[in-house]
Length: 385
Ligand code: ADP
Ligand code: MG
Image (cartoon, rainbow, N blue to C red):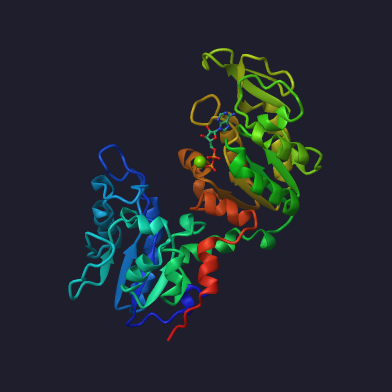
């Protein structure tokens, strides 16, 4: 797979798949332009290397194959103009439109207005490919999907990865991480985290588990978990991991009354959760144990909050661990939107070595899977001329 720096860009038309999926407020305004800022170095690099034209494409949200006015790319165009300090010409569709002479930076309309995008349609990909001589994939967060602008398109143009994807691959390669590796895994849905936990039990040296997933592990041991979140579909998977010496589960839990979560807040042992309570954070003793394990690490991989961090005081363990990890002198890698959000709220994100821009994609990569779009780039090496 080629990287952007290995490709001759002079006088070429570059078709860039970027990650433009910004969060919007109720009126369609851009709430956070972090993703657009991540696209800027790649766009600037392409222009500096003398590309004739750069055509940028991406999606916002899930319009499900229909035109949804609120999800048009117009505001993205305006923000890109501001961030680049250069003009960006926006087209009203992503296929079949002509580009006026002299325009150097072009933005296509939301790809997902066409159902063919998510269907990985060949013909649609070919129409997109008509806009470029070279394809650049810089949309890391969507690289685990088989979609036309990421996957089918690789058959029609010579392609490479953009600067952000290159960074992500460099930082999320667990085989290159310094040992001992300690993985800290939290969050809500065990379903999405099982492959990650399994991979970490193989590749890491310790795997500390927090978040709502712990209750499935307790339930798998027939412990009372009250009204805590739990997914019995995965109890067997959990049970099979229980005997692994690398796995560390919390020994105390912060609970609240299920009916009124402002009441009954206290810490109990993990095997003493009352029937009418819900577990919402890990307790002080577990926090201490996790801290001690984290201090031994050369590399820490963190994905998923330790508790219901959106609602204090259940943000305590997440915040305390974040602050402690921020001060440790080792390689610290973070994946997951909510985890990143927690770090940004504390204003300590800059202290971490790497915060991935991909949720699902980062999980798949860390779990040792090849990302579908990158695999396609690799396999369909259309020749560069
Ligand atoms: P990330 O986006 O970092 O990958 P996830 O999306 O997997 O993280 O999980 C984050 C969510 O998990 C948050 O909304 C958080 O409130 C929830 N969560 C964590 N622990 C608990 C818990 N004990 N009870 C309920 N929700 C929890
Ligand atoms: Mg999340």
